[in-house]
Length: 197
Image 1 (cartoon, one colour):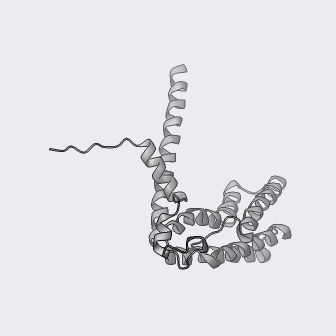
Image 2 (cartoon, one colour):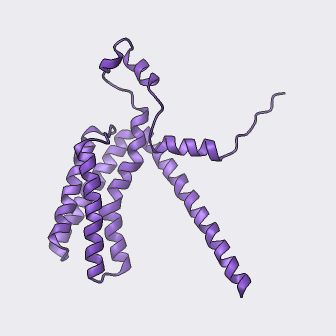
Image 3 (spheres, rainbow, N blue to C red):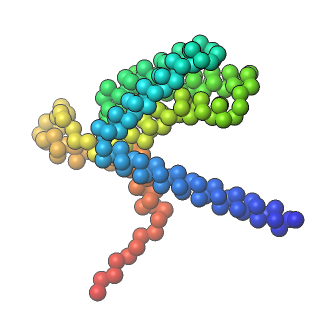
């Protein structure tokens, strides 16, 4: 009996490791797709925002969610639309980005408060969180690395002596989800040495 208990914990740890590796591999692949197809990614994210607004509109007519949850959902999607105005360039200190983060936190607070007060089946609660709270922010998070490979269109005043492309490539290291995954891949995975004959 004790051996089976230890074996079950070992299997659980192994399953968590495999699931984590699968999620990271999927995120890496999606981040590469977003970098390659930024126009298509923009259209998909705009569709997700529109779909989320449609879901909130249906909540008005079909369900009895509190008005503050629905209004906060619409405000959050308005901030997401404002972020999409400069896609793939996302500024972390801009009002739309900070507003969307604050609204995301408030949305979670309101949702936890409501769903702990009234009983809903777990699948319905998970559907609300997935489609209304997590889908668009997750897509925006994955698309943060799309800004790394986009060539600039204006010259910075600080680097007048360089042209646009030289200025872009001489900047400091790139930041974003894909560069984080590349760093983890380079630091965790062993390098293969090439044989020279």
